Length: 154
Length: 325
Ligand code: SF4
Image 1 (cartoon, each protein chain N blue to C red):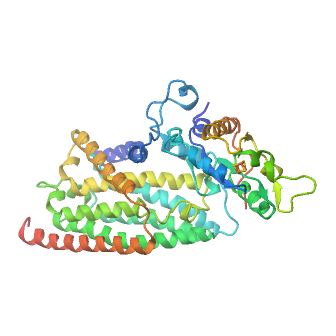
Image 2: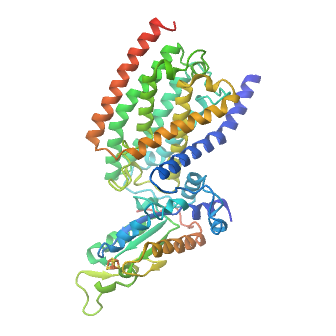
Image 3: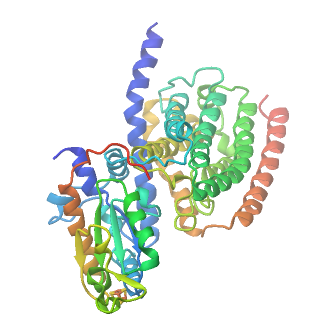
């Protein structure tokens, strides 16, 4: 394993994308990053701009108004990237999702719009489960090589 | 000729030394602030069961961050002014990088024997920050623009303090060569003119965007400030520039104020202790303060820079006319 591959595993930066939902998962996600678990031990950091991120953490189900933003934020994350869906809403729409008749406001889980690599179910999942999900994400990230595509425009 | 060869060789050796010193300073800063916040921070020796996957130690964590960024895709926004946007990270990095040659290391004068090395170093250190602002302003992002504006406001204050602190020392030592200042016989400048030392410390806080003066980068408030649109290798270059800037500022402080430490390589342990103490104080500033509002920061920072600037100038008058000369 080259030093570049190692560096990719050693420093996964997260961007937290709140798609919708009730905020329960967001509170738990932030709880997973607090001093009690302290993921900075392993180089995991929460960053403020999607352009800096390696792992996109999506929580909640996507309201229809929010569809373009979800797509755009996903596209802004540079390759290689991994998406971790956190919570029942992000895994399958949960109680907000209605197939027939269609919910007038809510589209459903973000995997209808963007490719999701890791699912962490639960309403809301415990911080331990979220950290486990992030670790699975890191393992998937390790498997991905630098994308062949040149500079990405947005 | 031999002199020039020696300088060239020491300069080559200095590059990895300064890089690793910068990385270690950033690591120490992160580790110390983690300990202050009751956290563990980047682990020094990894837990046994995780070591095969996650590596034996994270002392080089900032280096891994930079390497990872170099291995990523690099987005360039269509609405940015591309030439400036792309050139800025390189220029910021080059400025911070070149400055390492004009600041002496224990026993190694490098280029600091030049007559105006103090002036050159100060210009390079100004450039490192200025190109960050330029890049942000050209990125076409509103968050970048807000970050750049905030950066400029702080920049105007600390550059004033920077010039006063640097030249006050130069005036008392009667030289603009950093090597001559650093190896000057007599009491260290920290004792002769403590106000200038406090002033330079305040400048370091501003230049490295340490809390309470990190409103330019204000994470999550204005996205990532000047770095909002930067990703991949350009962000990596900025992080590299930051590591070098960390090294530059700490080394400059020691060169100016802790005079005998640079006389010979045997002073290296004292140098290291001095570095740790300075980093400790920087970290204390970081963890004790919340982020200031921009207007509050201006009045707070402006006030203290002004007070210490005036005290420094008065001290210089006293020293220059009644003490050393
Ligand atoms: S999964 Fe549960 S806690 Fe999470 S956003 Fe949905 S409803 Fe809220």
